[in-house]
Length: 200
Image 1 (cartoon, rainbow, N blue to C red):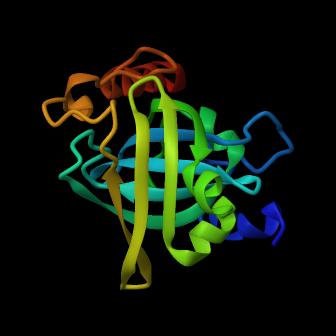
Image 2: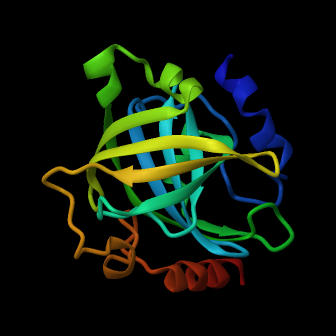
């Protein structure tokens, strides 16, 4: 399926005359990248996105990523996003889908571990419901698994689990200890205030 077809759900949910979120374009340079966006919507959560075959495959992780191997973080699959979304930071207006403040909390590149070991493309791993990647971000590093566990109310439910490697640390809590954007250095509050100032 072409990237533009994968993005139909994304486009159908948004009015781009009202939201500053990006429409799908033709930008390049996003291959094998990931982004984690902190999203203060109806409920605060973290959107984990991996570039797969020209789009950002996305999961909402309510508690955010963990560096503790004992943690199994719920990750709910959401609609695919355009790769340009990796740069989006700002405020989605009230009344629009996903209304709230969005921060680029972490980003970097990834390596497909299953491809190394078993010759699986990430697209095939996604269909099988088991993804294994090595993340090289500014805050989050090392191996992670995403495992599909089923569906609930039409949404795919997955688990995000940290691998036991040199970046595992049960004492570290990056969600609380590193609250600022890797793009702007701002907190969610400052991003919202800047948007209010610019729109006012």
